[in-house]
Length: 236
Image (cartoon, rainbow, N blue to C red; front, side):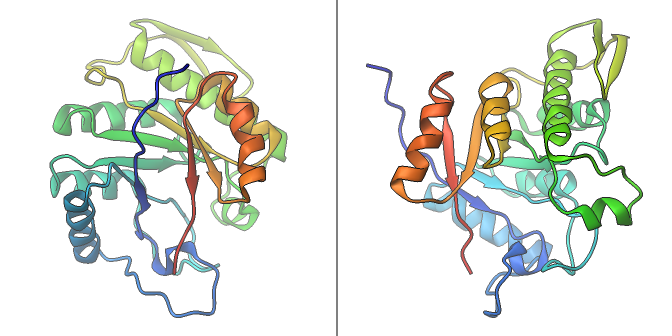
């Protein structure tokens, strides 16, 4: 029997207005810093393990205001002592070397409480608005996989070399590297491409809420690697 790990709890950080919930119901959260600091303290006191920040680069579509995820995650860490914070990163706007450097620095400031969630992107209008190429579905997950492989390589190796379709490195050395244990890597998506990618390169797999049968089929995919699966739902 595999080792049974205790159930852990996480919450969506409403660092975007409306919490990215597409609903006509008036939202009860606020995207501001003061509100989120207090929410993080409450979550930590209640025993939550993780807080997950969100990323959006353009206003609209349920998120007229939003704060950048890495900076916001660092602020939440500064106002808590045990809560782990997962910063969402979007390949394209982020390059792996920038992400690796940012997260390594935060690791030295706050210890192993910083993690990352690699999102592959779904909002074409956002990419168009900021002048980023829009890749098709399969290519977005291929890029995300390379992104994660590069993150791991930069964090582990002293002279990292990589030649992929989206990223290239030659004898790159990052110092200081993140403190041990290295930041956990989360990744989501409901498609087969997302599940297969998670089984290959991620530490945790996010999936949306579903029926028990629907969730079970996704767990079976992740169990090939005994990959921890997180079921996320957004409330109003």
